[in-house]
Length: 401
Image 1 (cartoon, helix red, strand yellow):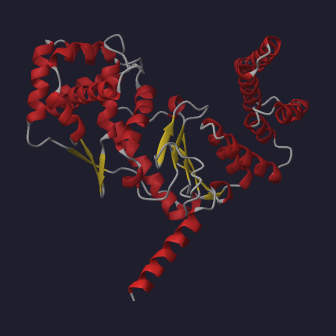
Image 2: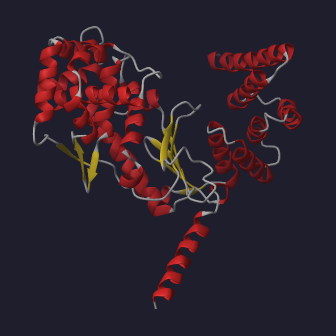
Image 3: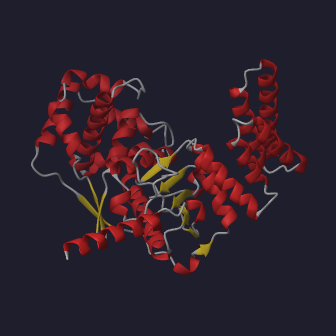
């Protein structure tokens, strides 16, 4: 009996792995557009709709914290990719993360690479990094680094419980750091910028202190909460981020450090509860995505992750659907940068089309720049760089007319 049970369990594991091993490039995607997001998902209708609702609820909570509504003319909608990448190849993985945020792409992308509920996939680190984008989009001018980081950490620690979102829950890791911190370093924390040279421990301490300052001000009173929000006011000359910063920095460092320690020492932290305001999207708005379009997006994602072989697979499959698609040709050329004899004919095919769409020209420019960086020949590097500048210039000229 035990042997049979073990065999059954092994069978279920093998079936699960077999199902999960279907690569994202072979999965069928759905498209769903909401007020703030464009989702491309292969996770099915119900899970895609739940993800959209949770994303909308999260950003609505951010609106409440910053007291700034979403402005599509300034921010644009975020592209969200959701698919099943649990197979052994882990084609779109970054370390062991099941979800991640790519801010440096031409169009920023939120990626959910495994199925599962919001609470399991949207962890504090992901929400914290994504919060930086939302803060910068809403701020009328650059915030002091400590203030931006503190707000981003406050947002990253949002908790969803049923139909409500909780704001102000403590971050145990930060609480432990604050209780051990060195007050003599406090002034440096408020004055310094984030540096890649810092150790993980130094970065953790800096983030913890930034969070503690903002958490304390948010929890203290309605007036001090409004002072934090004044960083996002339209009237920069009268209020702006300098007012929010001055109100905090007006206190002597020793007094501010004492207040932070008193705040962290409390047994219970006040938590705001707001209704989860994301509405369930209309399932009739879910539309199938043509395979070539989902393959193009996956190919671009693979290029951003420097997974050339995965990108080649996606773009080659897209070209099977659309043999002369210029976006797929440019993407495939970029994926073959290590083999110019394969890449250059693809580029020439696109150039022969004389297409003037900005995205095509930008793709060709990106190829030329990457090829220039890899070339050992000075004349070739100069020629490729000039080609890239000409393509970029054409895009700028077309946008200014």
